[in-house]
Image (cartoon, rainbow, N blue to C red; front, side):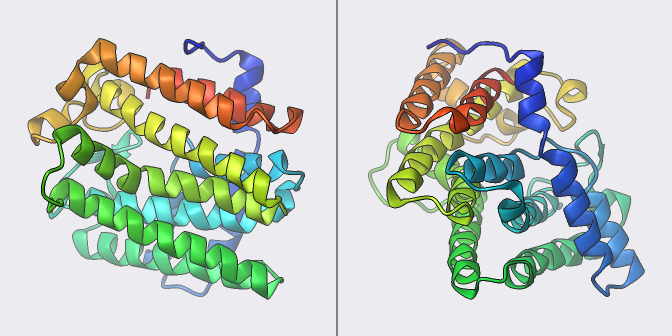
Length: 298
């Protein structure tokens, strides 16, 4: 199945949960006693735009197994807090040293490096606090916390593979690249999907289908990101274009070329659709979300 452009109806379904998740997050942050400058920094990084892909996946995976959006709000908020913490720290001078994120100055440029470090630290802690306080079922809270903690550490490992690489001997460049992508980007996307399915009360078979879907779209998302880095402008992306090439990082276009990279996207898109074959129409938003991710331009 070749990637297709999402219709207006698709886009509405994709973005429908965003407003409710953002209101939930804003209320959570405002209700927490914090220094004013720290709260302002967190809200700047957390609520200043972005695709909200991870919380959308959490909500849609919850619904795909029969749950309601109310079941998904705490894990959706928690995954976005972790994602935004990772972006803030990724942009720091010691890491990627970026000045632009989501079309605005990065947090350390808007404030300073100390506040960016502390703001990122706080978002990480708040994510787990949200799971502990926002879910009454203690067993469910513990299960979701384990999912998020494991994915967070895998994501950090991916950042190490990407910036301070030390791989097992004998890996090819492509094997190294997939290791980076499955950890740095794929881990949180997989976690977002699994937390949604778990919070929605999914069966083992349903969670297995969601997991296989997540693994396909998680890698696909980063392959598309590699492609956009060499085909789009900084102004269009809202972040620095061409950064991977400048920093000498491994990417799909560098290793196999642009055309083969597009073929890889299409193959992963097909795998994601096949993973959902046992789920009914409630999983249609996930199918549409996959198609959107395959053809996104930023």
